[in-house]
Length: 277
Image (cartoon, rainbow, N blue to C red):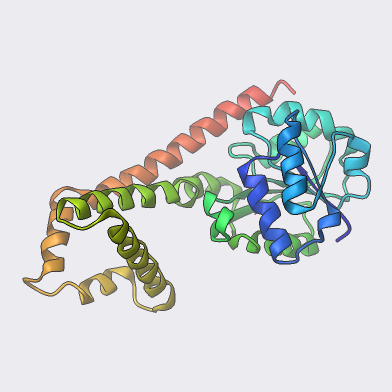
C-alpha cells in the first residue's frame, strides 16, 4: 500500500492509527490525517504517531489508496462534499460513520465508489474491537482482503450484510458499555460485602477475562458452562436465582433490542437529513 488518508481525528481515528502502525499494516510516512479545524489535535496525532497532518486536499489525497471516513456522522455530508472532487473509483473508501449508509456516501460523493462500512467499538483503542463490516458491489476481492487485514489490526473483524449493522450496533457497538455497567454493579456489591474496591476490581476483571476465554475456547455453549459451575444448593445457584428473579436475562435482551432499534431510528433520520446533498 502506498498511502492511507484519514478524514477525522477523534478517538476512533486514533485507535485505527495506533492499530495499523503497531501491526505494520502501513508505514508512518504513508499515513495522512486531517480534521475540520482542530489544529492542536492534528499536531498531537502527528507528534504522537509520527504521521502526516495537513489541510491541503491536493497533498492529502494525491496517490491515496485508502480513505477512512472517521468524522462525526453529523458532519459527514459537509466533509464528504468538500473532498468528493478528490475521490476516485480506484480508491477504497472505508467509513466508520454510524448510521450513514453505503448508498448515502456514494450519493454525496456524486460518483460510483468502492465503499466499505464498518462498525468497530471503543475496545479498538486496546486492540480488542469486535468489528462488523459491510461492503458494496464495487469492492474487489483484493480490497475485501485489505479491509479484513485493516480491522484485524484493532481486533476481530467479520463481514455482514448492511441491514444487519443496526443489530451489530446494539450488540457489540454499544456492548462495552453494558459490560462496564455490569462491572460497576459488581464493584458496588463487593464494597457492600466488605472487599476493598481496588482488590474487587482486579478480581472482577480477571473473572470476566477468564469467563470470556472459556466461552471462546470451549466447544460447549455458555448455558452448559454455567450449569457446570452451578451446583445444586450451592453459592452460584443462590446468586443466579436472584438474577432470574429480577429479570436480568430479559433486561439484557431488551437492552440490546432497544439499542438496535435506536440505531436504525438514528440512521433513518440521518439519511433523511443527508438527502439534501
